[in-house]
Figure 1 (cartoon, one colour):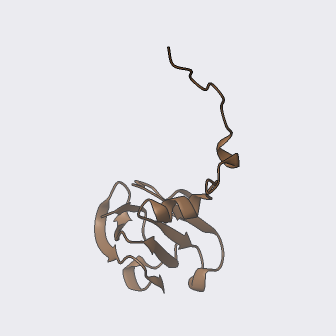
Figure 2 (cartoon, rainbow, N blue to C red):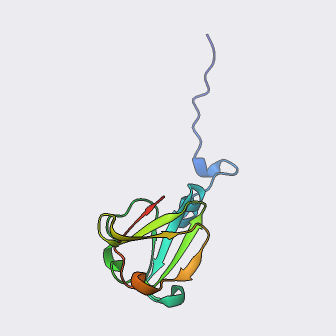
Figure 3 (tube, rainbow, N blue to C red):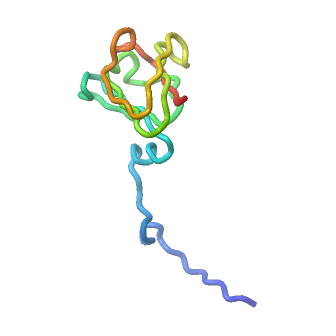
Length: 110
C-alpha cells in the first residue's frame, strides 16, 4: 500500500501564488472595460468584466473609457445590447464623443 501525504497547504503560502484584484484578474482573462462619469477618467469609475445588459449607475453617464487586455468591446446606446453600437478597441483609452458621450447603457466583449 502506498503512503499518501495528507498535508494541506494554504494557497498563499505557495511560491508565486497571490490574490489578484478584479481589474488584474480581468486583464489576465482577456480584459475589461473601465468607464468613468467624467472626461479624462475623472469622477465615478467602474470596471466591467463581461456582458452587461445595463451599466447601472453609469447608464447615460459615461464620458470616458479604457479597454484593458486584448479583447475588443461593443457599447450600445440602449439596454440589453440594443440601439446604436460602437466598437471600442482593446488597449484604447479615450473620452467618449458624439452620440456616445453620456448616452450608452450596455456593453459586452466581442
